[in-house]
Amino acid sequence: MQKEEMMSGFCMRGGSVSSNNSGTKCGRWNPTSEQVKLLTHLFKSGLRTPTTDQIQNISSQLSFYGKIESKNVFYWFQNHKARERHKRRKISFHHKDDDDLTNIPRRSSRNFAEMNHVSEPERVMETLQLFPLNSFGESEAEKLRMQANDECWDHTTVFSYTMGEKLEHPPLDLRLSFM
Amino acid sequence: MQKEEMMSGFCMRGGSVSSNNSGTKCGRWNPTSEQVKLLTHLFKSGLRTPTTDQIQNISSQLSFYGKIESKNVFYWFQNHKARERHKRRKISFHHKDDDDLTNIPRRSSRNFAEMNHVSEPERVMETLQLFPLNSFGESEAEKLRMQANDECWDHTTVFSYTMGEKLEHPPLDLRLSFM
DNA sequence: CACGTATGAATGAAAG
DNA sequence: CTTTCATTCATACGTG
Image (cartoon, rainbow over all chains, first blue to last red; front, side):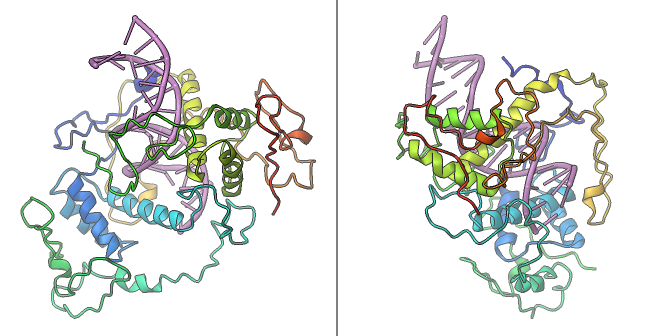
């Protein structure tokens, strides 16, 4: 009953939707499995906070598989990273009744936001962040190192990865167009 | 369909596991009536967005009545709050018919945050979300105020509530263990 | 047993 | 970055 007026809002912008193969109603971006696959792949390879350039590039590449905007990529990484970390911290996900007291002496919780305590062990990632997307056209000697990936491509193929083996779509490389 | 879950480790569908409320149900959490009762009670008393500590504490307490994880509590509150609000949201003022589809001003900078985000005019007076809950162990002078509850306990009994009157189970207080 | 509804789970989008 | 809001997907469950 209370479900009828839910659509009374706006949503549906443009209404030009429904055309995507994903059958996305519209409103918010609904990534296709290919898009997710690629994004996940990038994430797993270490990319966590893509730069504006990277975002645009990725977005462009992903647009091949469906409608997408830069902000979608931006948000995706933010969310993915945040949730990954959240889980890692076992804050509120998985784990049944914890008797385990991994709880660090955190204060009253919720506001550990601004504590830049951690000396960010992710310096490693920093290197990877520039990865890319803006300098492999010529130098393929970048020493990007995977951190803990079950899948490590050879560095020479990093951005030449075509996903052809995972996607049924035509090869689409992530190589930057150049700049 | 368009949404394949990749990371959900335990989905286990197809199982007509018929909800044995004591756990071992791999599908989704199915709260027992006692759990729901307590959760609802907490909600009615003003708790909207429990902190991590609260979530864990509540989860631990609820585990007495059946299998439960922290994330279940987390989701419960998220959903309950959202749906409560959604129901109450129909009383907002009318909106124009034109759904502005204009978006994506597309700026090439990282500040997607400042993209044109609808300046949503309707923000129903949200209930207090900063319900104390983190300092009643010693200070019972917290100024928690119920806003519109049909049931308001005295603040001194807030977390000493045992539910003995509503549940047939042994008293179980939610008093935070302390921190 | 089909179907509508209630609600757990997930995640895109944003706010802080 | 962390946390919250909104929307959607998936499913348990009641009903006719």
